Image (cartoon, rainbow, N blue to C red; front, side, top):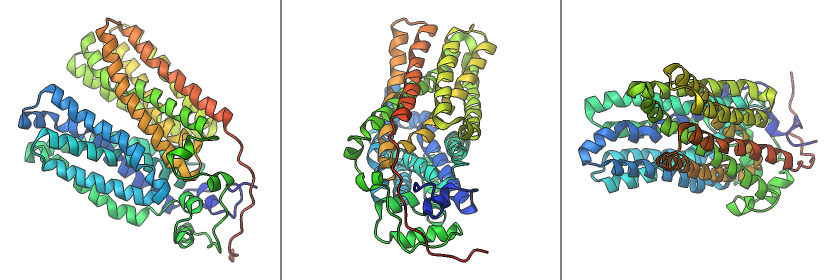
Length: 455
């Protein structure tokens, strides 16, 4: 029998049955952290006008600030997220919150562009590492039945946090100035620390696979909160867990090398297409005659469609299959993007295409959160996912930049939309290829648990 199908195995306490209040609380904390990350990513956009006026910045200077945060996120996913495979998910989440708290408060005290750019680079480390780690925590603590919906809710936390953060920012800037927005973000990060300590224990997958000091009492503590009997000894790890070290070199070797390359390629392609539309759609709509208000309306419709896409994915993925539905969303984004390039330049047609793009775009990003972590075994799950997300950040920079080059070269709307939608088909093929090539996990009998009276 496999470790996941044996009902006596502690992982079965997580993966089988209904979500307990303990698991719901753990997922809720991750949603809040993701919401904070969404606010922290866009905080420069909220305060850009005020900062530019205060520091007498040029547009190129603001571009540096935007890029610094994105670069930090890429480095955080690459360098900070893997720490959770070595030191634990919970510890890494706390480290990322500490970085966010310090970075946001430090931003409020900066006096020059160079200082603010460096602080934003530092803050990005916490954002990138935090997003990758909470993705893994949700995937490991949600039950099989509710995992995709839980990941979808986590994904929704990002735009919700950005939206609510924008609303708070308007008030704070008007009342206290732009620095108050960063103080607010730092205090929210600090307030989440007690929530993590109270509701987010260490991952069972990490404790069983890595076996740190005191692992057995910690596992039994989690089982007690789940209402399950205690273990006499830790179950034997699977062969993959026993043979895999928590390092980048481990996922660069067979049998994980092909999975790693495919996951990185998929993330790069998805982010290339998605960030093109996230960055350029409002401007394209404005230039097509919808005006500034039309461009803003398009961005709002894209977010509304994205919320619907995330929820549909969460409810349908278990029945349809995570990777099959992911491929469907990616193919759907290719179709919607192609349609956006060819529809008449009328408000109704353009906004309808934008709504469809948002539905498939956010659904595709959400699908990556759900589909990539299971590709890797527990000891390197965050390392592999973090690497893939880091490569995805390169795509996030490549997409908007490539679009600008194509437009400057005279490409028309139908041409550049199709060209920048094609990576979604490559991403879908990568996920299907990984699913076809994953080796079967050998069966392994695990130790039993202490007998407990059952009523």
